[in-house]
Image (tube, rainbow over all chains, first blue to last red; front, side, top):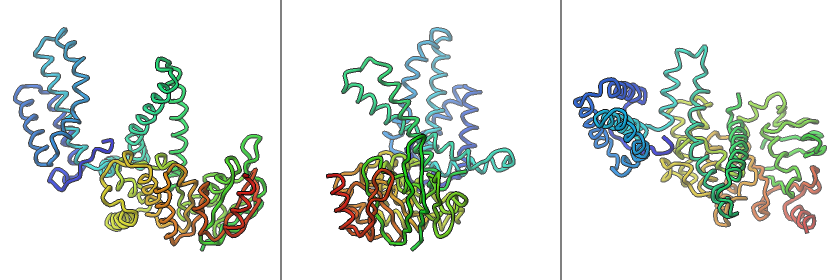
Length: 197
Length: 226
């Protein structure tokens, strides 16, 4: 979701975001609740078909799944220890499928479409919930991930340049100060763009 | 052009007076503001958009008092910040430009047409679906300007828009500014950016110390910092 939208005109791209979100929720729930080999196999085939139909480059699709493999590298041995090989394998496949399905969604859906879908979902509750505000909060959350990653990278570089690699203070203080300052600037920019209520 | 009026405007931040009893009427097409760090020039520029309100005096844009009509004025005044990273909200270039229009409630086709036109104008069409945070500094600043201009403001205020850019990108931004129909107020340390302007204001310690055509005003500024 963090700027990994892969533009295209496929059926998957053109499908309404709300429909895709609904199907994503449904399929992930089914995979989680009924982890039989048939369900997992069918979901795996579905992921492959969706990636092919959406013409997502395999490398790009793979890069979306890689981060969860690091989690599995820790979680699978623990699961093997406590639940056996079968349980560990089922858990691993379920997690990879959930991430892969979510990746298909984010790669084929612009964030604005997701915001619109969220707003449509929240419309019945508009007396209690400001859908615009929720959408904006979601957009900012997504935006802040690369912003904070850049900030941490810059502070780590500065820390290394000053020979203070081991110092937690030399990392935490500038990161927190700069994050708060960035939040101030972002707020000011939003105000300037008319999002001031 | 719009008329921006500062009427005995001051701004204090804690015990410090950042802007000190400034009275100006701005009607020109392109206006530059220069001054050393801490001279109050950015605060003055922010007042045009209502990002900063005066602690004394009055700022009006075409008669609208910022203290009471800030939101209405902001629809007419676009603001470009020094660091474009702080201005980018959405993940991709096209989405960030379109984001400005979300509050304008335009029909989707009209909004898309406006976004396409402004992307084309700033040479960003090829980058439209790229992650905005992965653009170069110059491209990010172009995106920031495009995101402002898509709302078709009457006035554009830019606070040191070329400070973080190399000479080539600064020149590109200057060229785009030169082609703007809108009234333009630019705060800058890049004096060459202001040479073709109609008026340049020099600030020092919160006060206006020179207000003239670019050449005499910039000469006064150079003498001040020498």
